[in-house]
Length: 263
Image (tube, rainbow, N blue to C red):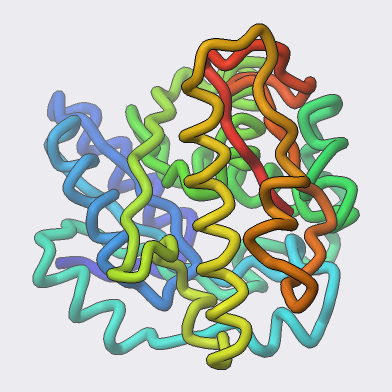
């Protein structure tokens, strides 16, 4: 397994792999890898000859400095996990490599970025689309694999790739869950017992919503009353909890092709 730290090294290797007729799949991550990330590596391996993983905690997608500093980091364990998973290249640049001090360009997607996380975390998606653009330009992959856990992010990236003509196949991989139903996430390590209880309560709310949405009816059930009944008075108050069409941020009107999204 090779470990690269500069964009120029990665671009040169990509050019050589493409010239040899080999397909490249990129799995962008912010590190603190868990089995969910490794499942993305498996999906990537099914679609390409070479699997590359990027590890970079992107500062521009954090609108809270404390959130950035608290984000878990475990580089040595991440590199070991990548090697065991058969990753061919790990790209681990520093902030200076990805964001030159005189840089003035960002990438922003309208519409899709406005509701849900876009409203709750101003500037978040601008940071995501900017770094993903940079990673795609650096790695020049044929395929990029992202988890469906961050579904709005996945929709935003797909739109950006289509609108800007990157020529990359964006693949969404299924969410892996822990034994209690909570989606695997690097941030789970920061949850105290009460926060975890509340997070699992949200999972139960989503499960109940899904069960009700499958009943014959012209409209999907209202989400918030179901969530409230699961959380009761002690539960967290979500900043956004809506049923959405799977490819747009607009409110869904039918149960076909829906995603329940919380922020």
